[in-house]
Length: 80
Length: 80
Image (cartoon, rainbow over all chains, first blue to last red):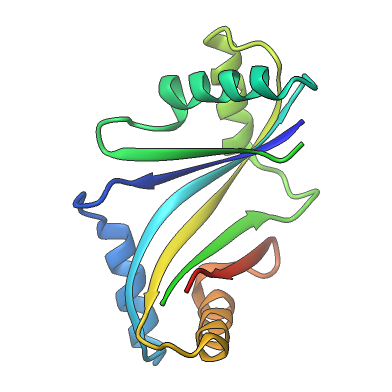
């Protein structure tokens, strides 16, 4: 099965990288960008056809390694 | 308007960071992870209510800065 995990910073957590990108876009003359926040995405292939097993495995992967639960949120989408 | 831009490596482009994450997950004892590829996600707020203008702006942002069109693909989702 294929899945996509998206990890984003929690609201209120400073994102200097996003701010830098925002500044760079403005300096390129792109008007109308209000804010940018950067996150990470992981495209994962899993050797099971069992959706609930895949979801459990991905939850573990996020909490052990992919996301820092103190400052980040994650979402898991199993694409089938 | 809010939008999400996702930038991923094209097929066939080596992803050493993804490989490292895959190895780390295996070493944590998570069985059944076949492959991991890492990408980036940008949550962007745009100062317009015009969806087609927002899409045009984001396309420009991707091609100028957010994605390296030689090795990366991007998708734009305007969330409204």
